[in-house]
Length: 608
Image (cartoon, rainbow, N blue to C red; front, side):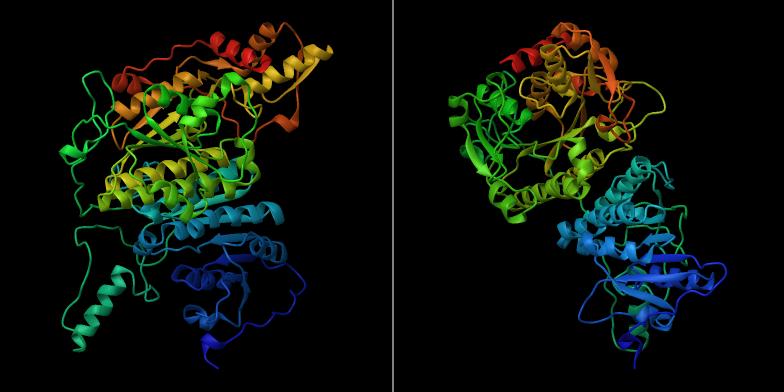
């Protein structure tokens, strides 16, 4: 029986004495997995190898180990199988090496790459958290995360700038590992692996392609060796390593074509391209704008603003889902609702995305998202699929349309200041600060940013990214802090309750009126620069403790705030205030509402 036909048998129970440590390896049949299995077996470990169930077993690299390891079926696409494997094996250590790891394939299958290489990490960490949180977890990150390297050599502190769907997915896997460590206390670490070679390397990788091609030429079986970009440089290692230092950076081989866009008129008005001039100069045609998440809190305010500006608005909403009822102040009027062309959009369905997005829009405002931290924490995989992978699907379709000459929209991707995460000093955050998302929501939004900007670099799609700091206003629901405070304090006043339940009141935030945020978005559609990131912020800090007192005073009650563990957020960022100098310089934007105005509007809206 050949090695590839062998079926591993159950091993006998552990003997008496000191128990052996157990290591679980995903991707055990790959280059790194096979070497790691050899190393751990040599150290006396019991090794469990996770493989996908297929009709053909590919055990070539571990054929010599099959009588010494346990092979178990599971799939990074299937949460249940991963949880079962972790529960049954109870490993001391978990090494996640499995991934769709071939960069060219990630271009052909970007969504599947995200499912395996990004979301698969979340599923595995979630399995460990649920079934065996004592395990120590290692995530194999990649130097492809550095992409267009910001310094040479790259260090652990070098900003990520991925240039492929594979690199984007690896960035998400890296940050979700950090998130699970900091939010749940798991022992979870990442190693950033630079290129490493061995005789077990696959033929699709460049060093094996070169060595195999040269061997064929020497043996007279071929006369030429075909390769791709010869200007790209990589750091090389002889064997798999955990944290080698980089020695080079990727040099892109394709220049970005000149950008064409709807332009400013004499009065700073956004005009659509006219058919009489090849679609490149200001014309009289009405601007068509797609708003995803148009029935959400911010979406309704964006639609209202765009209609007032004379735009032709297309509203994309999730099919079969009715938005929560809101008061008149936060909702669209019947006339406004009738003026919008409503389209179904399911961000998790590639065909739905294509049907909604592949139209000749002049601009796209992408708001649709899992926008609640608590919702994302309950199901981080779904948050990733909607926020990061959903955005990847949208910009993929728009990028294809641009390349085919069907459309060339300005795309405003609305991220969040939550991506900045904790800071070592309480100062306003700038766009140049490194990100360190500390929640599943923030990690998924960081993935959204990366996916959008990668499409800009690859296709020239005119993407602008915003990071809005905390904002509120009429129509926001009580999952968010300001309307939650108002709702609880009004209820306490009605029944005469002396105590009001609260979460952590220590964090310091700023709060913008949703109208000011929407004004910033409208200005960026006109004056924003593609490929740039803009904070939307007031810079006016206030602690949640002070905010609670202000709302209580406006309501006319002085209750005692009582901490409720159910309202506490894991990984709460203690200071999150922004610097919007870049936005002001580019657009002339400034907030028009102060905190008292904002709170009064929310109070009045709830009274309605």
